Image (tube, rainbow, N blue to C red):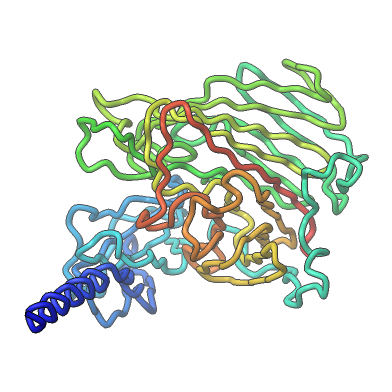
Length: 453
């Protein structure tokens, strides 16, 4: 009898051990190494890479042009290259245009695919349309002895505690075009211009142009993040893929049919509603109301909006404050949401500062641990933009992976983009958020453009 009981207990222990072993989280594939691109003939390019091939079932190939958003669908999404391949040739490229070519290791389980690694930006003819990749003024590599002095002031300190409280803003409004232009001085006392206008495949009102001092940029990707989400209710769409909203059309990148729509904008100056014309005051507000589709409601008979998105831009004291409120129109699962981003122009180098005083710096793809409160991108012309994330709403990072709260992805030398990680993780492998119909989430922070420190 005792022997039988021991046998049963041993069986239970073994079964429990097997169960726990099965719960060990698998690691993503190693990213390809030494990714390079070289010209082939007059209109071609060869992408090559190295890998030991461990666990690789194939390769996804990426091509991004100046007309695309940063996240693009693989060219061979449904037909990866064989695992033995280590190169791919692109043909029929156009002169005087730039291209970003990348590669990703594909696993049996898609959630374990590697990061996408891009080669240096490629162009048939020089010069590239991008600014020089070498900053004229590098940021300081030494952190302040007092980390609290490095971080931007908390925007919740009203208003006497804010820097630049005496800076006025001029606002130009064109209601028919849904265009709003903020012009002011920066905190480093240079002319600063930020324009909101309908842009991208969606023609939603987003950050369009921005200028500080002698540097001028036009957006070709989103500053406020799109959504990787699906409705809980099944739809007729097969294999729904890609981001929606922001800069992203129905193809999952910057092309295709609209996946979002701006319903209205409202502008006020010092609390008074304004319409067409130019106005001056200490504070200007533009409220943009959007509707956004899910990945499985963007096509055919399933086409419908899944969330309401209200973006409140407040220009005050040389800063552009942003608040985003998201409300579900039906039950949705949000798999990836970055929220606040740093886009083109400020992409040579990034600095991350956490609320506990840690400081990280990188000029390549990087994942920042801890709770990042300030993400700073540096331009080629000696300027920086700080993206500050408040610690409330989604900014407490409770709906995201604990592995990192912000990251940068480089799509070639000097061509990075910074992201906060507010929901999920960048591989949609964990921490998705179920947002039921009528429920809302939000985040808030600010952008600050200045001379580089």
